[in-house]
Image 1 (tube, one colour):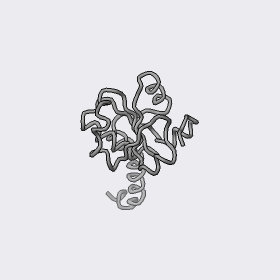
Image 2 (tube, one colour; image 1 turned 90 degrees about the vertical axis):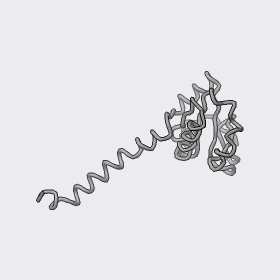
Image 3 (tube, rainbow, N blue to C red; image 1 turned 120 degrees about the horizontal axis):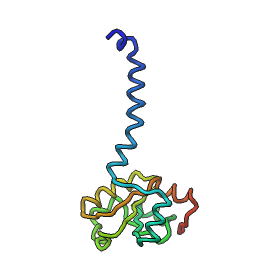
Image 4 (cartoon, helix red, strand yellow; image 1 turned 30 degrees about the horizontal axis):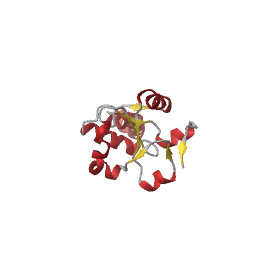
Length: 135
């Protein structure tokens, strides 16, 4: 007990750093499976996956993945019927960095979409890989 009291600061630092390591794994699990840019291009080319941009309309208008559809996260519940016909097809959801798309993927899964993937790293990773974008 004396050790804990004498080293409370070090124990707190160890606990916080451990929590910071585990947090991304917990967040990733909430959105379901994710794919990297290579896996995403394979899904697009081999299985004709729908690519869904859940960033805001202004972000989508500025630049987006070639042939993607824009459906902002803020409107996903109200407009999910627009993409209802893709329920059984692979759907790749992305945003700027992968955070918003995780929430969108979880919402879509609740509505019966069986094959939804979150693009790891989002649009930033797509651009960094040098893959085609539409401006």
